[in-house]
Length: 569
Ligand code: ADP
Ligand code: TZD
Ligand code: MG
Image 1 (cartoon, rainbow, N blue to C red):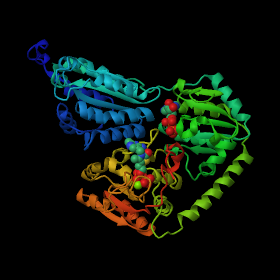
Image 2 (cartoon, rainbow, N blue to C red):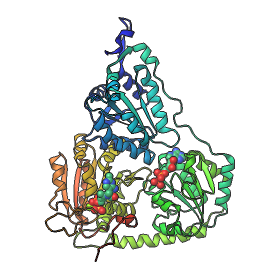
Image 3 (spheres, helix red, strand yellow):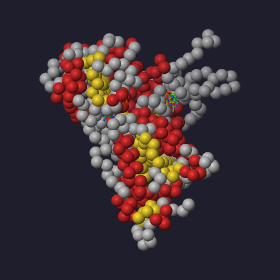
Image 4 (cartoon, protein in one colour):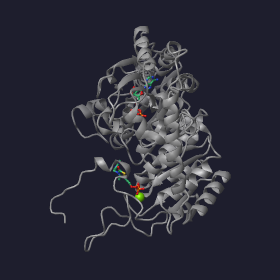
């Protein structure tokens, strides 16, 4: 079969699949593509760049995909990732599934083998039935078979990724389509810009009243902010709800900074108290999943009633009874609630009790952060980082690891919305370098990535991508020589399965990959290296030597760890 030129009369100006795809992406406001090129998509990168757009070329599709998903989260536009067929597609699929799990809008576009060969399983180059494999891992999986369908497919992908609960979409493009031609004029007519692809979803007035009554009658109300609230980009409305009602709030990790961690109503440092003692909890863009102990058990203490703001109707009652569901987009729901709560009495006594507890734990923490130890531990190293980052509130913090994650989340304050990107709903290691790249590209501001040494290893080669694009990223590798700890005894004639080579020099890896590298042993050295790196704007790895005995197994989720009790002394 040849390209479908025969249907176009001679002399007519032509376009093809490559051009139409790019036209469609541009019309949908996409300027940055993250990906990894090869047969059959190579031309996409060259042509995209030739048009003056940016193509960020990665070393592994998984990291390009994480970058695209973070771009989607930060910009509220789908992040786009382009890959080759079968193995490239599968690498990218991990990130697409992760994006969907986290409710980040993303479009994965992969080239695929020819249908007639794949469908008869005749063994094409990188043959795989990608369309069907992607389907359970994202919101929708579409294949484009004709150039005249590229416009509608891209619009459909954008609308699907953005509307309702955001998530991932897969677009399958068989290789031959890229070079299939059609009349340029007809092609142009086949493209359009979607009107209002993420429409407001207004909550029912009766639902708003129900929620308002519950909140007004609460003695100890609590607002719990999730990353869906941060994603919604209605920061001022959320802050106004908090301040007008006087209700204490606590953020989930990526919602830190949506209202500043230093706000007087922030109950993060009194988290166990507010979760246990509150009587009405207003969930805003946060699911009652494992990260919130499913809304039950001893974490939650006193019986309570939930108000839940979410755009996804069947998220309500997912784990426990929700007494006042508010189904709609965060902004519409928050503003409707503000109206209905006008003039409500502030729970001042409760608020003061929370503030007092929070101040107490912050003071206790401050002591730990400034206590010197012979080898750095998580507290004094992160304390040093926190003091530097105080002066750079608009830096994006990327964070992965176990102890390196849990302690950094607790110690490092965020002051502004969407300035923290971490391992998200899955607790996935390896988001580091892709997320750092996207954060630097999309915000145009410096990025600091705090990574456990294990976590960093998942995407370490992508550090070259950061140096290649000259991105102002400082990677702090929390080098304790292992997963969780670096002091596990090895069995005879073997190396412990939890340890890494203690001679690893992450600072020298940076130099080898074209960046700056420095190894630090004390909080003072760490603070100086971080300050220097941020000021220089140069891509840097700080190899921070952490006491191998400082971490705990599984960080702060040791309760989920499974151990055998058989045969142990
Ligand atoms: P966290 O991990 O911070 O607790 P989750 O990812 O569990 O947050 O929850 C995010 C929730 O936010 C999801 O249930 C999603 O449906 C919801 N959500 C995302 N965007 C919006 C929006 N614009 N309006 C309302 N809900 C939203
Ligand atoms: N693989 C993937 C993709 N995600 C995971 N979460 C894991 C494996 C399991 N895992 C964790 O949950 S944390 C972690 C792994 C491998 C690494 C912890 O070690 P670290 O951090 O060096 O990154 P600390 O500071 O030593 O605890
Ligand atoms: Mg480690």
